[in-house]
Image 1: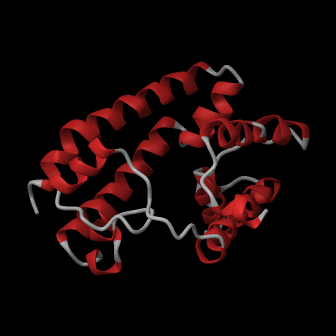
Image 2 (image 1 turned 180 degrees about the horizontal axis):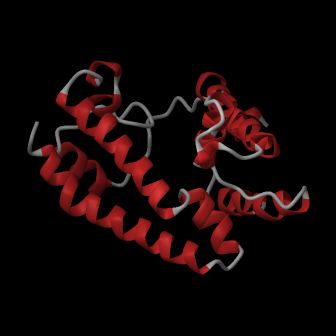
Length: 188
């Protein structure tokens, strides 16, 4: 069983398991899956009342914070106790593309050359941590939710705005991957 947990799961197993969270949450109390709203709940807990955006009953959404803590705890357990010792498997074209960008360390889930602690105070850190983080946060707020909220929950509920948001996420990802990211790597 432990060996099964250490292996990557195929999409046709992991995808339906993620998808089953939607009816489970709906059955358990008409809850909506989404991660990005957690920051709003934390701010509503910590920021004194008076700001209209944070003035709501955040206690009704506290389950969402437990969900996020569970994700972080699961990531910790997976990282430190269920790590697959084999190198990350990526396609040959992707491998060659990343090499052309100067990325050579494929030992972890994310490249240390971009997201390692040594990059925090560098130009790469500024671009990928600060600007990238701001863009993700802005996009999530602008779209009224994140990829999990729109693509997993919203599409399963046949929400038109979620279809539009998901299409925009995909188009944005393709543009970023093929047009903007190569220009960014030319800076280094």
